[in-house]
Image (cartoon, rainbow, N blue to C red; front, side):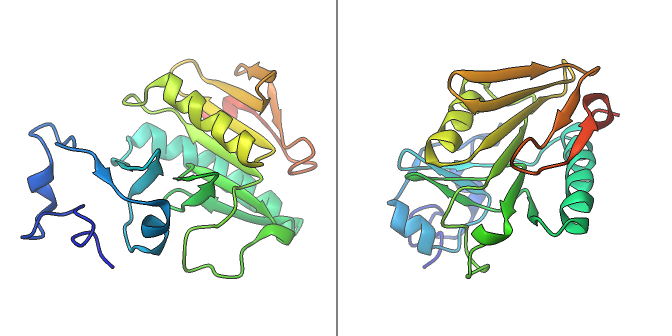
Length: 199
């Protein structure tokens, strides 16, 4: 199955025909969760029955993601705790498929089939806020991860150079650049200065 069969692409196969001059979708693309999971579509999240395109991110977004993912990767690999997974990887989160900027899966939870989106949510999900992000939607995603079983969600905000830690709907902590970010009981022993992430 491909994007054209789902109506994600017009008959001539030109994806630009579905976009406005600003590059935004002209119409929502709908399909079932099962269709999405079986498809070869990339670059989309699946939320409430619709495909949400994931546009390219800014340079700032990229280097902040790289700063944190490299720190996490080195620590997790050295201590053989699991896998750190970077953006473009889909995770089933309840009845949605979300693409965190960075994710962590403990060894015991790494799926057998690595050629498809993960059928389970990550243990840790990280979202780096982009200028085009709507903050309430980022928060909705954080709560969706938690509801599906993710233990920890970090939301990095470049403008304020802060990290918001979501453990549950009632346990939320804001860290500023002078604070230390830790992996708590999810990536035990990991820590870094918040300021490091935004340098």
